[in-house]
Amino acid sequence: FTESGTVRLKIQVLERRENQTKMRFEVCDEGVGIDPDAISKIFEPFTQSDCSTTRRFGGTGLGLSICKRLVEAMGGEIGVESQQDKGSKFWFEITLPNFKPETSEENLSDSNEQIASNLKALIVEDNFHNRELFSKTLSHLGLDSDHAENGSEGIDMLYSKDYDIIFMDLNMEKLDGLQTTRAIRGLSDEKFRKVPIIAVTANVTPECRRECEEVGMNGFIPKPMTITSLKECLQKHFPMATV
Image (cartoon, rainbow, N blue to C red; front, side, top):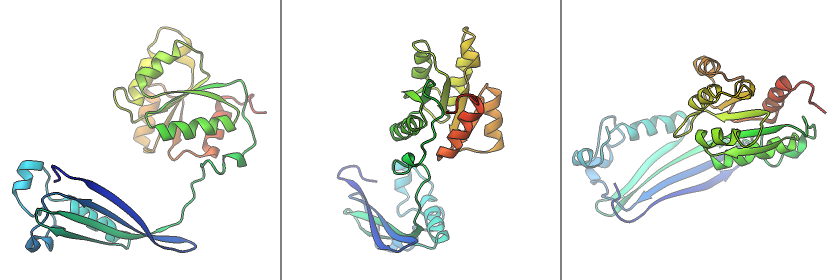
């Protein structure tokens, strides 16, 4: 509801312990603000402080009630501070377990087993950070890799170089991973029908796996990707390449 001014996100560590960390998240705007009489009701389902906002900005009045349920389900608190015509501050505090991902730049060096030095991979992924981490992980396993930012670019790159394996993100704009795979399998050159294409996605449902198989994918790596899952995938498709 901020037509001019700023919207800021602030994240604070309130308390850090050995196994958990208490954090505070704030979203502050300089928008229309909320009538004091309405503040106590805005976390109720289908409630907005001013019905005219629905006409101007859309919305159903469910967002804040969903946020409240999620935060409270995680053992946290949520609240708001606001002044009409000056803006609002929505905040919540939750305590989270300390977590270190298995795949990180710190522990990539823990794995000194290389799969092979003569395999070339293509990473089709529209998220920059995911591409960088994937590429670095493959490098530690001994593979060279190129990356494409979307499905169309990935298809174009196949004509310029022979790749031994393709890692395909499913959720991309323009052409998603399923559409891109279907297009690759439909290309006239036989090599495009044989190159292994591995789905990389956070959607691990049986329906998603079935869709991947139906368009011609050869494997499935769930996000967040781990070194172990990547090794297993490579060793399955290149059993003679391990050094």
